[in-house]
Image (cartoon, rainbow, N blue to C red; front, side, top):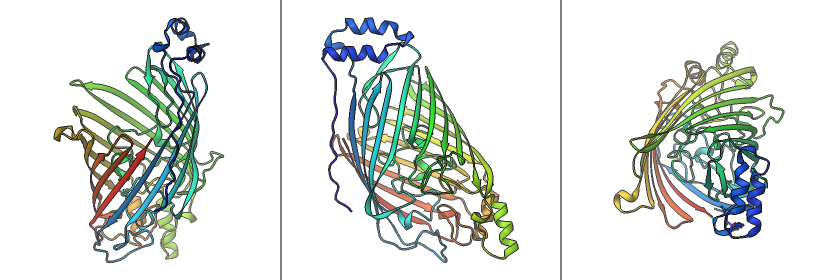
Length: 463
């Protein structure tokens, strides 16, 4: 573990000042459908003026330690989960800087310091057990600028909601119906495939197959970020999203193809609803990847002709992969919610930027501790099942290696089955501690290996 130097919380709040009223005027000046806002703002008393942040700074620190028990392992391959290994620890500290550039234009920068590795150097399980672990790791701390993006919000009606200050969010009034444009470097899943109960490895579940749609092969470098743009159109209970992103220069690469020759298109339709007075949402997502990637069939055919193990790098050509995801969440009662995701991709090409999954289903629930007089506690449980396409099974059976998996053989294929449960305690407003347990059957789709029991502890601070 490396020593963490505290990040500074520096925020400017513009309340109760004459010039803040002028800022409110400027924020909506020149917007025809906000023509009454100027008159209203001018007549407001200082105490009535909404908070508008010109800039802010927040930070977070997360430490995740995981250890698995020894398990049956009759053979291993280049990307196998080690049957015995010590505890692995990942640490990351992020500074979230925000600056208001013009009326509804915002700039965000997220420098980050990282250190550590996931279990078996982040290999061995397609539904990897730690969303805090990147596909690259280092023993010593290193820094990266993970996000650097612009956000422009255009009002489509006069109704406003006050947004509170937070990471990558400046406090201020936000139109309920709006068009939001995001441009720069960020993560695709910052905007797409969100879920209130399972999406943040710093706060809820850890397993990749639970926090994201596992068959959604989203564009990203080895740290999970990319360059691109996204547009979101929100109208009452509906939001339509579209995005165009650069993929890595080669599958699972550390660099992004900034020429966009390797690219991804993503679309998502979200509907928010009330069921028995409880909020819920359903999201339908579709994506298309266009890049130089290998068809599994080509790699297997070449391997049979040469008598060697299949090598995807020797048969890559222009190809496309498509897929979809269905993502649902539903509050069942106060402080109790359930979620489910189902995703699938075409399955005839290699995994490019996320993980080796062609079909995935996850379900679970989250409950607050108010039911046992501990309102700051959260308990969550989830099940995930991942599968391979026939082409992918043939490739791994012949000894192929993927992004995260590859035991050198796959004589007895079985779906990867994952159970995860966690218990999180908010020690105070800024600090939380969580215990996590995962049970993985058929890791890397291999019925000859496992099952694996994995214990984890997460310490998270934010300010």
